[in-house]
Length: 144
Image (tube, rainbow, N blue to C red; front, side, top):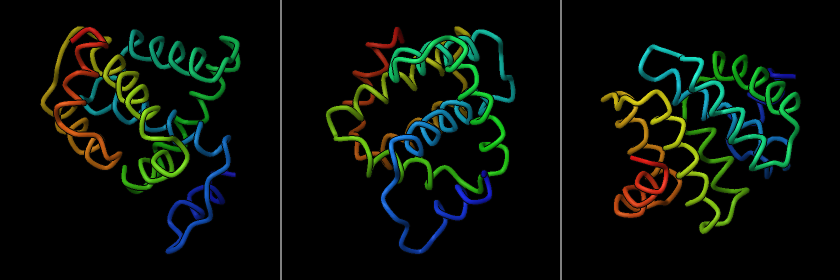
């Protein structure tokens, strides 16, 4: 399953993502952000589950299962660009601002801002077509 998903993500001209693929891409991106500082903390895991549950109307069990899939996918994915491209194609711009706020909430969940996380967020915001100003506003909405 993951090999097929990664093959679709890395195809030269990938087909548009399904809703399920976009969910998995977002979940994997959240995991990648949480792991960026080298400390994948329980508070970040709980925050990812909460974001997935709220955003996709999932039960806590379903959100945890999606996150577990995303952890495996993230560990095998070659780069962040593929995930952001899938999200950018599947999610309208205004909704991407909400996605970025959710990402900031994961980055800030452990109460610390790390240079690796900040750098990742700058790249991700740019790849999602979000300005630095809008990213800063999203960070403030997320509590930072």
